[in-house]
Image 1 (cartoon, one colour):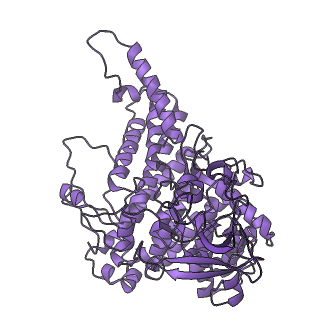
Image 2 (image 1 turned 180 degrees about the vertical axis):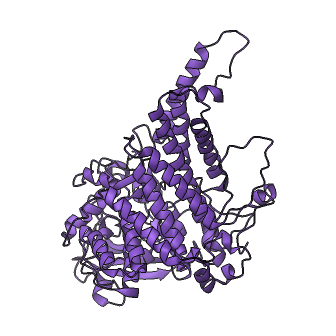
Length: 624
């Protein structure tokens, strides 16, 4: 994949190569054509910018990798076997078998990027450079501090306390470094945030680069996590025997201290973001219509990256820090996750546990035990459902653009249906099933596909076209949720409800009126639905220590059968029609693809055996 920053670096390196070739003074004294002296980088403003720009590649494509963090949670199932996700979900990973590890949180990739940040800070703050433009130096320093804080935050929320490296090591340095405590890591990241805020306040940055507001959002997240159950060791010990038996809990959280003060700090940090940002349509005092709610949520997911009808480009104001893509990018999120009946790969498909958690549009829970709801499970749901989930019978893109004229209705087909062939009634499998006549391998196991983050533009049919939807590392609504959560934990229910209902009103959902423990549960439900597929749920379930009841559940699928009503028939091509068919929907627990089981050791990832062998000061996480 070629994200924006990689392309920038390509041009910067091409310029560097040109400069190098033009400066040759002796035929034999030639600089390597693909390398450049470190000394030269910090004497040239363009090269220094290129160096910092390259650090952004540590962000990769955000959460748009083929394997997504959603599939380590009760949001989705990864369709394809032997990728290591199933090992994590079964609780069988260990220091020699790590399962899937993405470069956006991998131990070595993060420290490689941290080293680049350290070099930038040393060179620009230490005066070991000849760049006269102070405003440029401040800008690059602000970016370096933000990115270093972000990378350490990634390590902290996956591994707990890690070694804090704040200098660029030389070959003769001692690489054996002890883990810092969780508290020390939080303090370090917060200090980096403050530095970034100081350098970047009032500075106009290009889209996709670090800003003061992004550093404030990072600070808000780190403080919220620091106040949570998993990182309050007295609380965590009561909820996990594995943590209770660990001899070095200081690496996992706070051993003591004023937890109320931590919640107050989290609340203040979140409020600072709310005061400095704008968000999108969060000033409503009553719910919008369901149609508006669906359009609002779809617009937020597109982040200004879609030209589809009805998508509001101004929703890009919701984004605080995001990963953007350009026309040369082949970032085909839709291809990786879309329906196989469109020649896509069905990568991370929503599971029934997620679908069932979407409320009815009147705010009441959905239940398979309700006969009316079971008979028509996809009617009158939370408007965000229709902008997030592709379900059987849902309207989708023109299928004939990639699959031929086999579905003039352009609807998702994940069931089995009666059809009349001559005088015989036969049963066919839908075009988007694993028995599809188009592709019978890249199909959903769960009966659903994701809609969120797939550009709804009918001209972008993912099997052949890239899309340019940005990945939201931080968006304004996350800060709203952080503020709500901290307010609830501080007993400030009224202010929590006010902000929580602003999110619901934008979505076309009625107000929440609960308080106390019930309000906490309502908040967690709302965060689950609003932030789905945004790399939040995996961390939320862990820090709330509800993973055994959520992430550890067996995955559920839905089986759909369409039988002719008496006196009615249909010939090919099939289309969804409740006037002709009786549809039955059967939720099913399946373990053939994944047999999920929660183990408390998964609250933190293991350090690899190789890393432990390289650094004998590194103490392993509990349970490994």
